[in-house]
Image (cartoon, rainbow, N blue to C red; front, side):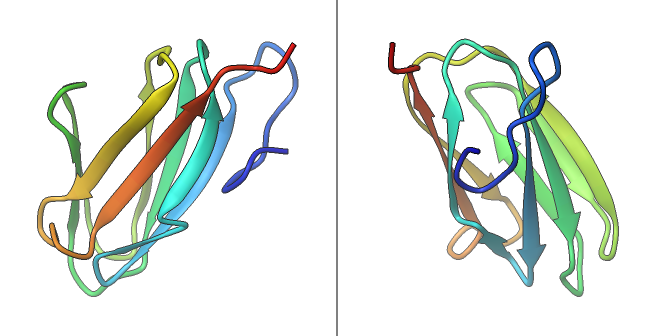
Length: 103
């Protein structure tokens, strides 16, 4: 199992659920495997919309209050990638930590 979400069977996308409540991501940091596409399920429990964004990856998704949606990230190299809620840029930060598999 990976921190911040559940790994799934081989061949399926590793999926991680992120709850956003009033501009705060929970968890605020997740670890994901390198070299695999990743599915992030976003649940907006806040009183207003959120705009989930990473400009470098050209990821942008607006999610209404009370709604849930997802984004699929491309295969990523090891490192840290930051996503923000553009409507709450101070508190709304998610760090995705990509780690290479230990072999």
